[in-house]
Image 1 (cartoon, rainbow over the protein chains, first blue to last red):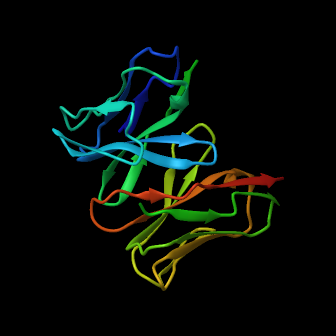
Image 2: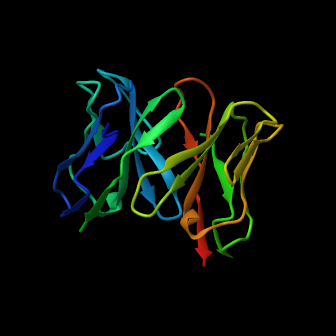
Image 3: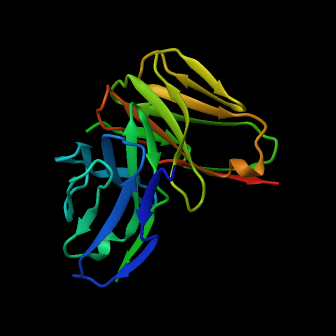
Length: 110
Length: 111
């Protein structure tokens, strides 16, 4: 099993550009989520989904969109990147209470 | 929303030393979890605690769920260089509710 796979691993964007961070899991987990990790701030929840077709906002949703058309995939979209979105982004899926994290996407917005 | 205060923020210790870190909350949680993040990777679950007062071990790691349900601690005994990383506590209320994470404790171990 690959677990939770995130692509790309690294990305540099210019302010105003858009992009999609991909996340796929092969564990048939219903729950998926996106976190961002910033120095001194820990892990903050951006958006989450409890199943295909259902999404909800987390703690820091502004500037990000998500959709969940399949159980396996949960992409995170930045419509107009801002320097404040420079961060490391983690996707995670969950069965019960154990979160399984991907290895992250390091995004820099210049 | 709920907030977790995790301390210390960072620790620099010698190999072989014991380490203790803790998390406190202003509100109660029904589950406490401890994760470790190795450099360049995502966090991985170390220990899950489900009952107030519970003390659980995983090798050299021991964690406790505080009796008030508002705190938890993690101890690492006889630290080794591969213990280096960021340790996160997380609290959850029930079922599929979201997890609240602490800000993390960065551990550095000198050989």
